[in-house]
Image (tube, rainbow, N blue to C red; front, side, top):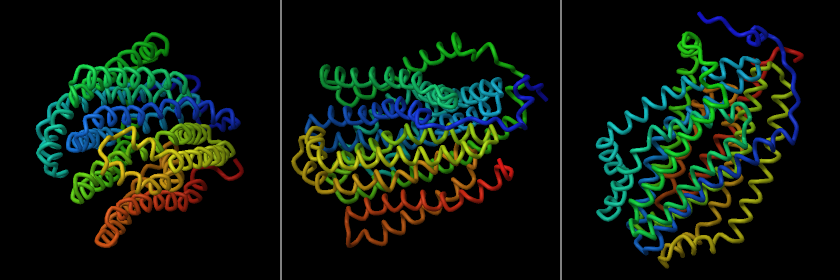
Length: 453
């Protein structure tokens, strides 16, 4: 059993702190800017391939990106779980445990990344079997996945680095790393994909380079300036209680992520069954949906960090205030995004693809994407509150219920609504997640905080 540092001896005490608009925005604004670079990357990748006028290649890129969304979402706990546990340790004043959480995540990241490389043939087989791509689409899918898989360990290390930074509320450092990663990626995607004519392989190599440079930079700074090695305690690193808590939280977040990505997989599969044009149009619109998610991510990360810190500090006023302020700023951002898509979405679609039929269909379904900004807000915020507080079991269980609703709406309306059924089901999936978690919040709150605190 480890011996806690002096600060950790006070973990049973209430440690008050104030949650202000400035505190929320200090975390939210940098991570919103960072988050916006990720869908911007997706837009650039789509635009690069879209300029070739090949719907099959565009669909293959979308499917390949979906494969990594699925794989990386399984290990999303390396970012979100780390953020929550680090924030709670920060709230308790246990600075050594912050570093222990980080190194546990790094170990998992490296092992998992190498395993992903080893099972590449199985991944390709499963992707082709589940998504059922056409011959042209399958070629682009397999090429993209095979190249990008090389950087899997580095991508997961980046999750862990970001988890530590966000758990400590270091949004600006996180922003710098995301700008570095996605900036390199965007420049090389344009250079290699269009300039050198490498097409899909150029986009994939751009991602490999960006992930690798960002991981090396992040680890170097954390070891050199962040005390990541100086505070490393090997005996405490493998403490049974700490390891078990991480395993339980990681298991629940992993299951939740698998359920979440199964929604996107079936979304793509059903769209593919409706035809190549529908698949390509939905691929364009899903980039807009990702913009919504990443635009709101800054506020939800603030909710995660502040809620986790409040739980660690055992201070309920800070917990309540973090919910109120993050919802307020989230609503502001959701309304802005929805209005932007309604006003300028058709112009964005025309930039992303030159195929006339794809353009027409994507513009027709734009209102559904605008609606996800509102239906997704509560879902994303509640998810983050529950992750920050480590109430992972409830989050996992409500995801099961939301997925059941998704399939019910999709297959109950598909025959007479067509592609509308996909977007209706997605919006209902988001709405149910937020409502069910918020219904469970009062009970969890009463159990977490002693009366009167």
